[in-house]
Length: 544
Image (spheres, rainbow, N blue to C red):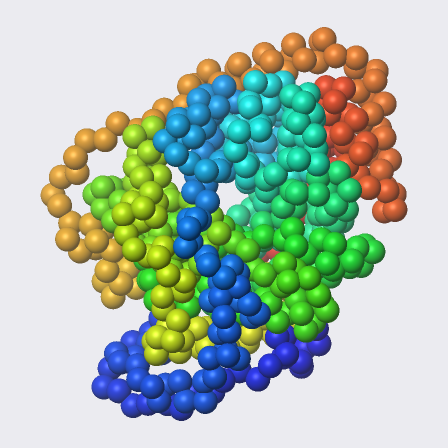
């Protein structure tokens, strides 16, 4: 994609301005009129702009019937403490009716560290489940529901552990279904759980694409995520622009590695936030689908319709939850969930009302799932496809958001693409500016947050949060000591040396030697350390 070309190969619609008495602004800073009329869509051709549901450019959704007959996948995000504790919560959620699970890992696991690493002290099992080796996956029934793993820099290691355990349970790798997030570019922009430099991380991602194409053909190899950028402060336009720019970078890396576009693109998935601003969020999702479809068809020549479809998971906005009057978060989450459904999400996680305070309790997690179930089975929103189609307001917002997203994407292209822009701290700086402005608006009272700067109460009701077992760190360390004393350490050392050798050879896929090492009892930290020894670790520049 050249810096001067239109990334989606068409001319954006320029709407005839209509004068109204009141104009506010969307979260993306675009004009938000008090009244929209037919003249706002002057020159707007439905067949070109939105098409039919399930047809290019997929503005109205990627399936012709969407939720008519079958709702979205209700995929709840959970994990804390040990694998045993997390497994109990997963079974509780499955019993409550969830159709998919999303596994949260603790910070040491996300950073490719074992639980006995000095930097892991005090963090083991706190924000997710601690996984150190094959033993921590033992006993988890992997064949019951599809699994999504929120893991990035060491994604290949956790995927291989999952595959090894599944094969031990008699499940063929070719039958495994699930997703790994595996989106390290957004870690440099917003989240921070990166390990290796960007170029080496891209190599690891394309190795995963290639490995899964042969060994795990039904696995979604990446979930390209705008969610964390939005949580850091990105506007809806920034969220989509930076996410799709990252997606383009991954596609280019895969093509450069010799993969064919229609071999890997159907397994690409995306992950977005859903805020309380329903109309803009619906427009955001519709614009994202349209842009991606045209990029894949016109820029990369994708012929397979599935390569052109932007499939995405949505999570309600954790950043909008408040510790003050936490029950009000139940209302916020319901509104956010409606926005995701109206926007055509493929799967949805609804946050628990107490997540601004602590890890969700069992009751809070169940209520979050019940929110989705009420929307799916007690309302009429699933009875028709894309009910906002043709709305003067939503179609205008969709077109205007698309134009703003394309403007930001073109700016990234001028810098040399997403990875080059990351090295210049462009996306990070833009997000920080947006976050700072929102904070100022809340402090000034210009932006109302119920219970925080308006409608406060004098005394909060008592709340008893979920507490993670404080002995989890010591327990994990004991398990690691036992593993290292019982395994064949000479064989493990040889297998780890093979991983290190593969890291030095850009023509070799890293996953096969990693799988050998993990099968022999190598730990997450030991495998990640082999890559650290060759590639080093990434140190960001600060340009705020």
